[in-house]
Image 1 (cartoon, rainbow, N blue to C red):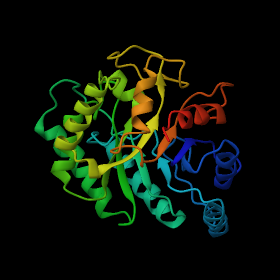
Image 2 (image 1 turned 180 degrees about the vertical axis):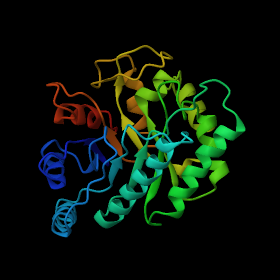
Image 3 (image 1 turned 30 degrees about the vertical axis):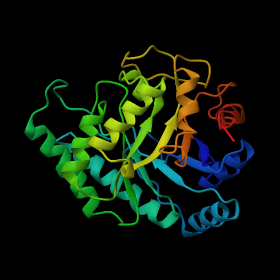
Length: 279
């Protein structure tokens, strides 16, 4: 089972690797730089080598970056150009560090209802520029949205995948976001229906990773507020099915929970998820 958390890189990227082992993980998600800044970080060759050597030694794989919260690939002005540059820089660093790719909140359209073809063209153009100007051994991983932003629906994510037609585009499903968007995965029937829809619109081969989070809010709230496993409104059955169903059990599970001591993903949350695995 591949499981880990989104951990801090304070003091250097390699500190997140040792923390992963401490909490019982073998996968990882990190920010490459401040999530609320356009500035990119350029680590020294020595820092990169330390990270690569340690990740191999500790057998932590896969590892993902999470893109800045400022990114909006639907912005046709300065912010859109900055978003492209930011993600290209991040994917270049990912290639050097043996990181699979970047998980991205795609952004939002100015008009939240019924976006125009021209608005979609801006989004597609920015994604195309990123793919053309970043290393081919990295993934552009679009995350589903839990609010009224791009990617809240499986159909919209499918539109992006079908339009771009590039094997480097993958999908991350965040359980809190899916819950917020109104997708009920709690029964075997609804769980199966969701993945049937996913396969039809996106293709299961394009599912790369899960972000595992409970939700502080009810189903269909369109509010993205993460909670520790078992302390929110997502039924336990959702997580049980994810770690046991043949379509999902072999994918990485990344926790973005607040932690039982409010210090981020912790061993207790990881142990809870592991306890759902049926032998």
